[in-house]
Length: 115
Image (cartoon, rainbow, N blue to C red; front, side):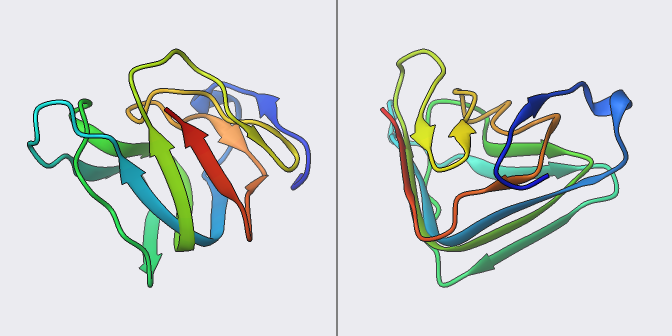
């Protein structure tokens, strides 16, 4: 449920819904090369008024079996290990596996800095 994060494997749950409300997504580029936003499986990716740039990982956000909404907020990811304090819990670090296999994530009106 939204407000509590539970570390689940993708096979442990049906396609989940991940909402990043009022948020923009930015990966800190190490090489300057842009990174793609990757969505796998039966998924939906919605970017509304947000900004997504490249990063060191192959994908800025790889979501497996998740519905993802990126709306007017800011998420930054550096080379530091996992962990970012957000309302409702911690977001696993690394933009490749970010939120992958996690259920009920809502960071509306928030800024997530994983740098």
